[in-house]
Length: 266
Ligand SMILES: C=C(OP(=O)(O)O)C(=O)O
Ligand SMILES: O=S([O-])[O-]
Figure 1: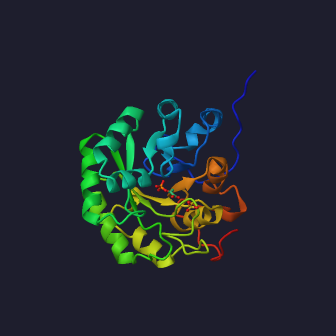
Figure 2: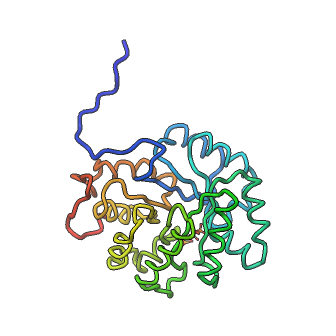
Figure 3: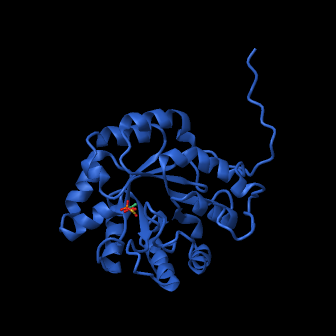
């Protein structure tokens, strides 16, 4: 006789998909469709958004198939912000949106961290994406490690992007976790995090956090259902255990977080 799987621990609750909180956003750096299919057949429940990093969508041979696979698994497929920035810099924005429609993307990322795009152009691109029926992920912060945007400027841009119709804000961290919300050592810019977490609409923020220590800091500070982005495919299960307090970095995590010793939990 089959019995149901025993569960015997008291752990922080995790909402089921489709979630409005506790999103896990994966950064695709060029995973083959076979690998994606195999991984998602087991772990799709823990992945909400899938970003084709920077310009990888442009060169992916099986793009439309991969996007369809993600849709079938209940995962939102999103373009990388850099791709639209390059299209904008070459005056090919219409062509970008035609490409995104052709591939079946439901979401586009709009950013200005890789090119000198003025904030007003970014707002126009957010409105444009919305008008075309895309869900817009607006990224805030620069990819340039020398450009330390002030907390006030970040907050102003978050507000403007939400007003323009962005569904989600993505805070810059890149694949490396050494820019944007982080210093060159990967440590969280604490004052910036405090300012962001206090913005009206902060529940719409997805914090790019590619390093485990960064994920742990954000979970301890903001709770198990903070939205985390730029997660590597290999880290999806590990992140789920961090969210539930099943790894030493977050043992004892409650719904409102945990203020452990300030260490990075590395
Ligand atoms: C994640 C990156 O870029 P994008 O936000 O454009 O995907 C990156 O360059 O590390
Ligand atoms: O592309 S990066 O940030 O390593």
